[in-house]
Image (cartoon, rainbow, N blue to C red; front, side):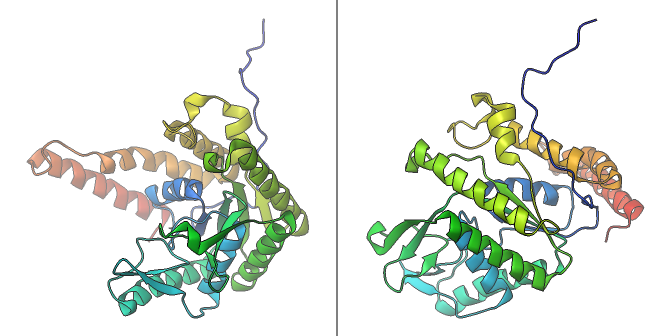
Length: 315
């Protein structure tokens, strides 16, 4: 009898100890891949905070945001095109006045700080080693806010700079939450605007930095091989979105399933299994939402959700 073969290379996923539980609080920071996975946690009703200041791409920018969240300092606000913004936050976080912008951004940092102090797991997804600094004041920015390129200097973080930034992040998070586990991932998104060779150099630099951190902090820092799963296990353009750069929803689904199977304990896996049909029903958008049938359908889904929360003791 012949042995069945899977026509792909399976990537080993390191075993977590302890496994992620239903009641763990998690924070996700980093590139858009962190948002993809983090929103899966939210979709299933798991306690998570996902990029409250917006997407972050490099280790130095993540460090600046973590510093500000745990050790609040003067916010770098600026005005452009009649709106106030912050160089450490997404364009959507701002206001028509300096005070309004300050309140919005401070609220996001406060949310992140509180989350980091409670977190059992902090997921950091690194996208690139490229960063941008304002020429005036040499300020590192998280977002260029579509301002003229002449205002910025583009720089590439060295391996030692990436390691130093990540190490400081780890030390800050350990102090804020002694029980924290930091999960590092490298985004599989390819940065075509830098050229594919430079994109690979960026990924290589990040992978080397991640490996160094895992060796320095073996009891606190671990690595989830999302990058390798996309590049070596799926390895096909059908697992990319239409831009041929971002992972497709199918690829994200697959990586999520690998996380569930390898990183989560039995109770959490069972909870997700029971939650899935409820999640689908809550996401359903009927053609006639005000009809008695549609209202009954939604109410039934909400009642099943409350029953599931009661069963698992979720508040």
